[in-house]
Image (cartoon, rainbow, N blue to C red; front, side, top):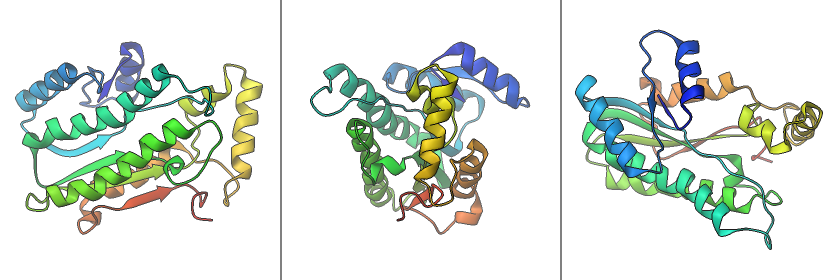
Length: 216
C-alpha cells in the first residue's frame, strides 16, 4: 500500500494489520514508482492485483481555474495512473487484474468540477485502449467509478466545519436515487469483485458503484 503522507499511511497499515506493507510514494513522481516496484519485485516477485486508487482534486469554476490546480489534478489523476500501470507491466502476468479508480464525475456535470471530471474521463479512455494494447498478455483492466462516498477527501471539500461537512453529505444524498451517499466498504466490495476470478471474463468496463446517481 502506498501513500504520500507517512502519518496517514502508517495509521492505515496499523488499522489493517496482518502482513500489510506501507511504502511512502507519490505516484506522480516516476522515481518514487521505480523505487516502489523495485521493492515489490524483490519481496514478492509479481503483482496479481493493481488497484490504482491515488488521486484527488479541488473545485474551481471556469474563469478561475489556475495552472496550479490543473497540474496538481492531472499529475495525480492522469500522469500518476499512466505511469503506475506502465511501470507495473513487467510484474503483471496472465490473469492479473488492474483496477483504475474513476468517478461518476467523469460522466456527469458538476459546477466548478470540470478539471477533476476531465481527469477521470481520461481514465475511462485509458481502460478502453489499454485492453487492446495488452490483449495478448491476459491482463484485465477495468474502471471502478464510485459515486458520492463518505470519505475524508469528500467531506473536506466543504471545509473543516463539521456542520458544513454534514450539509454537503445531506445535499449529495438528495442527488442519489438510493437516497444516501455510499460507504467506503461498498466501494471496496466492488473492487474485490474486479480483483477476483469472479470477474475473469470482465475487462474494459466501467463499473459504477454510485447508488444510481450517474444512471438517471
